[in-house]
Image (cartoon, rainbow, N blue to C red; front, top):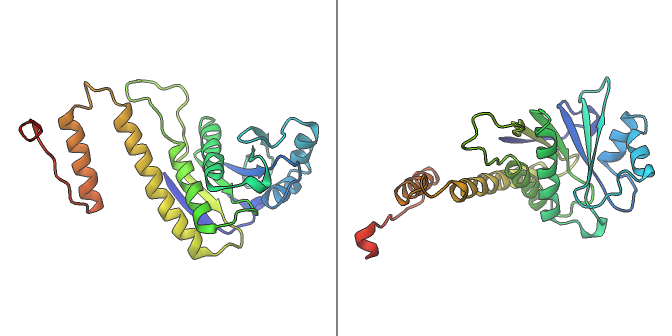
Length: 221
């Protein structure tokens, strides 16, 4: 999956859907305010009604009409003061899984105004988004609700472009590595034999320019 950066205003993002953060204090800020305005207050209504309380990773899906995007996913991030990269990673993963399982191939995720370290937070979102695409469907001929998301745009607002780029580059590598390790671990041992595992490790090392030594049974004995 591709993760890219844009500095567009959230309400003008051209994507299948836009994900925005909501905190447990119920006060909309940053991207959530802009998107709420574009939805004529629909997001505020959901928060005021108590349907979305901003608890970590709870979410509400709203439909948008006559906007560059068709859906809005509001994701709870918990307490504003407790925001950290791991929370942002799960924010992105939640967005990818909820929207991707509804057939959304491209989505935009807004970086909260409360993000403290731009590079680290951008890395967390990229990693979480990519990790969110992982499916254990190796042996299913017709998986029911695979994640359809192929690209994610991180809406960085006015944040430092170079810091965002560094973060997304690092997060992409980490997310892909996490999914690689998950695939190795989730593949049954009758398929992921020692020989196959060595082959996978050798291929990964070669692609990364890393030296690797593979020991055989004689060496192990």
